[in-house]
Length: 86
Image 1: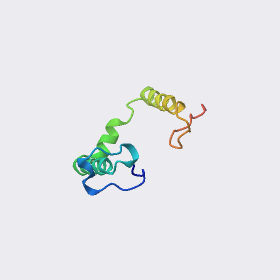
Image 2: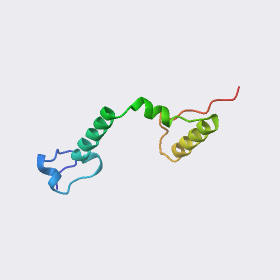
Image 3: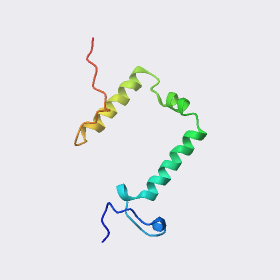
Image 4: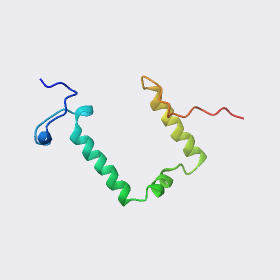
């Protein structure tokens, strides 16, 4: 059996291989797709379109983010803390 950290041969896409962290071909395909999307789309507009439209929607999104983070093993530094009321 091949060790997990060994790089696959160039023709590995033709054979079934590792999935997840060891799948170099999937990583290349993902990176290519992201680059193509960023080259062909207005990313700033997409970000504005995804922003909450109201304070209620912003609260709902933050609550959903916290709920999802509460199920993780370790807290992500990217999860915003609740702001204390003034």
